[in-house]
Image 1: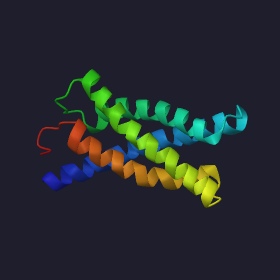
Image 2: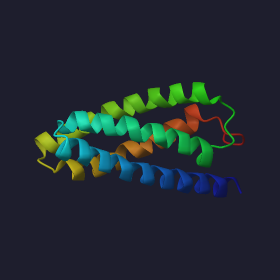
Image 3: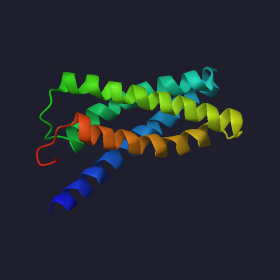
Image 4: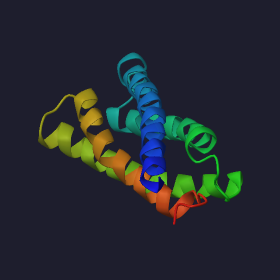
Length: 133
């Protein structure tokens, strides 16, 4: 039963994450190709906006039984996301500058790597869900 809850929680998190990631990609494209902002700055801006939306959706639909207050949880979430953003920007620079990948393709690859990190760290450190530990 506990493994079913964990799977359902992971699937919900993945759904929220996928939705906000699509929005992240849209913002990345908009900032980079329409507003002509450097792709690394665009990556950071899009990430911060999307991760904020992700927090609120995750709190409501994925980790609804969290015992941590919203404000405190958001600060922790932002701290975790800040480290994630560092990973995102470094990996983006590596994939685009060194491996010559298109910035959108690079962002998709990076999302898979950093997304798993964000899920696990938030699951175990931020959202204190009853029955989770």
